[in-house]
Image (tube, rainbow, N blue to C red; front, side):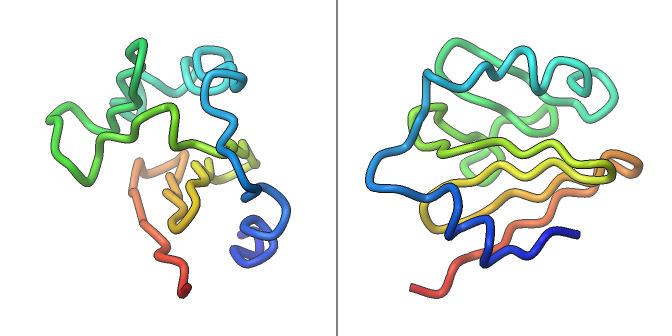
Length: 95
């Protein structure tokens, strides 16, 4: 597991990258296995669209694809998706 504080330090800048990230290339290999839906404006984790599992692309600073986990980095939170189990955790940054 990556150091969460380090991810915030590296990727969270004054402006999210949003559209500059190639969401399809990074997430499409896992879309079926992890039930990820990629639309034009948002990423939906799991099949049911709820406020906690729907992430507007404009709010995403980076997506880090590591061996066992995918990290979706926002200003004040990081979604951590386990590639093996599909388990999703959310780290809330202490501001």
